[in-house]
Length: 320
Ligand code: ADP
Ligand code: MG
Image (cartoon, rainbow, N blue to C red; front, top):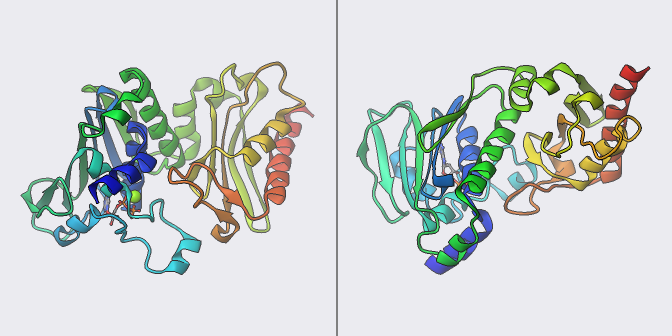
């Protein structure tokens, strides 16, 4: 069982940033409005994420650490209409099989917080703390040296973690985020709206040269900001696409945007954008890979056309 968990863990949590992503998604699924991410040594030594969400009642804490236990899906048909970010119920169990995990949580009606250390076999004990949850993950891959060997330098792993925080913070300007590394505050974003949050995260160059997009057609809606050619970069690090609230890197979408920019962007420049596509969950499969960064559209041609035309129209309006 332990071995199976560790193999599954390799899929779900291939590096510290994957742990950060899973924990952040859990915090958001719990309705949090304030999330703190503390990392040490690129996340390998420690990843501690505190939220102010609804918390986990003590009797459900062991279950939260058990494999294939999710509180988010009641039936198979729910799988078609996943409204939460998580739904497999394997993230916490996987993380707990390759790291030392302490879960501290307090629900709104509890007299105090509870804490559970290690695995689903442990028993929660009284603890202290405000409403919400802290998941403290220490010594990642301490028992799987082969995987640990694949990790890059502390700065590289931290960079991946910070990128995950940025992606999620961009999608949720209604939530405040703070990120620290080795005790130093790296980023802090207050609750805000998309225009401001994206300016904070993509920088002034983007804030000063971007077009707002908001178009709908049938079951499809695209909204967000597309940077003008002057806000383009030599590096492809300012491209954020979301599908139903999830950051994705999808060939169809990337191609559609690139094609829309084709006439206005020259050389080896990359457009900057923050775009969100919302559509009926039944029209898109997010169940492609555990890291859920890829999606599969029922009608990718229609999606491509829609995105291409929306971005192209916005760009044409300015050059006219
Ligand atoms: P999933 O998110 O797929 O349900 P996880 O393994 O990520 O599976 O989490 C297991 C369960 O633990 C969740 O279904 C949820 O009930 C609970 N949980 C995890 N993190 C939090 C959190 N930050 N706040 C409240 N509940 C949480
Ligand atoms: Mg989850």
